[in-house]
Image 1: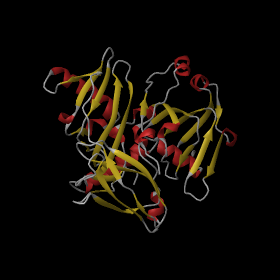
Image 2: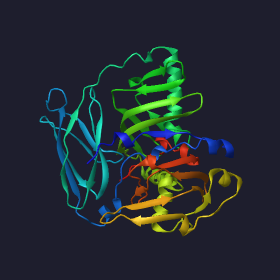
Image 3: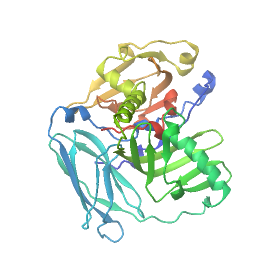
Image 4: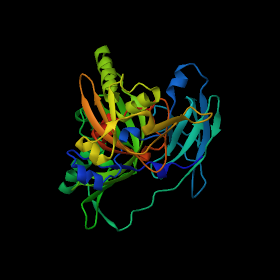
Length: 371
């Protein structure tokens, strides 16, 4: 079992109108937030398999005292609970897969670990949460009451929520809990909060409760990184028509996404699902010098004794997607290690793939739960 903080930094670097030579020179990671979270093999649960359990306790790292009412949940899912008076918790009905389990409490630093559930597993995971300490003097805090804070909130919303079709109906319900800072001598916006962010997405029918781990964003060039630990809760529909609309919007958000692409790649039905993939250099793909993806361009192998796959490819891929409602074009490159994914298209390490193009627009407004 390993801690998860080191694999959750997302570098979002959108290129709205990329220049081939510029993109070749600046081929930096740009991951859609949609992929934040660990793997979850939902199809196994739906087939009637016995589900797993995780138990444990949460204590203060300095005093050793049990921490009551700590939120413990599987990131990017609807599975979660609170600790009791003795600091203990239990998560049940977990389908087989690899998950990121998060312990979050106001006044303490969020902590997470990976757990691997295999059929009837009952795992035990304890957490020791460190109390939050005050920020140093490297940054300048911007007070809530002034005009500058309101301006920075607007910048934060644009970067955090995104600008896709779901964004207009995605609302940050408690922005007042955010502190904004500026790195001295730069226009890098740093956002932090000791509270849980509450986000309501009326387009997809979810409410998110999320701890913000890191948010660093260069406003001038619209690039940066943020870490989010979200828990989902389904909103009650006002009527059957709204429920149908949410289902349609969720499907629309999934269709053409990186997760949809990876799921189709594992299933071997890219073309049937609306994807066309070309291989080559980034500059070549931008200028039309490329060739259609062939079996020799990549390897996809089942990980022994696990419901996971290992994906490797050595060049950039251009992924075109088209259906009756959208046309998307994105570019991906694999980092120094293979991508490990499940049949649903969830990545164990989102940073293993670099993304440029339409997929970088997928932010919090487009988040869907893994389960």
